[in-house]
Length: 133
Image (cartoon, rainbow, N blue to C red):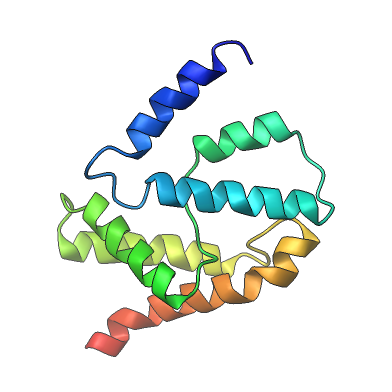
């Protein structure tokens, strides 16, 4: 891709800017790692298009409980300009829509290896407000 190195460098600067919250270089590396894992297990996709989508995407749900808890904290920090009540209501709507989907992932490998952990993370986060009351 012509100019790809310059674009990559600009994006890396953006991902490492202070205050990025969860959209940081760690998050990007996790997503790219998941793509590599899918490819290694037989998933076929347009690598350039999918990797570009990863660099310009949003969201990660397959981390372990500690990583997911950190993700939640950094999402909240990224939306610190939204008051607590509005954030909680909006976040719950997003989580309920995700949880209602028959599958969170499109490939069989991802469903088998990541879906249970992702659903557990979603369920735990959806229960959390009730647990605190």
